[in-house]
Length: 152
Image (cartoon, rainbow, N blue to C red):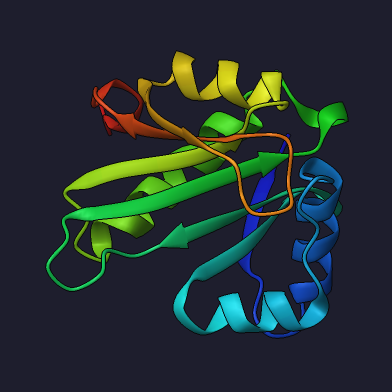
């Protein structure tokens, strides 16, 4: 297991999009949607060796806010192998380097693995909401422990 994390923009945006849309089929993104996100968000893709295993998003804090949002998505065949945890550690470091003093995430309610992962890494639910035209809620969570972020 050799986790390799690369910036998605600009030549790996299609791979980022493919992972996003597989994990969140209720809210697929177009190529233009992803290009727009890449302007203000930090998008990355992760590989186990040469095999694409996931993607992540870091939304840096906006002016006047201490919170960044981090979202790690791991494809089902690669879950429960420690790759998601290593990827989370990476994106947490990226968010903190951008000034984050609070960390949040968002998970589609139907993604039971994602919710379990978030809860097991210290995130607690804050809010549920449904986007216009959708039926499955998204869940906002906030990190309340530093345990997974410890560099020790």
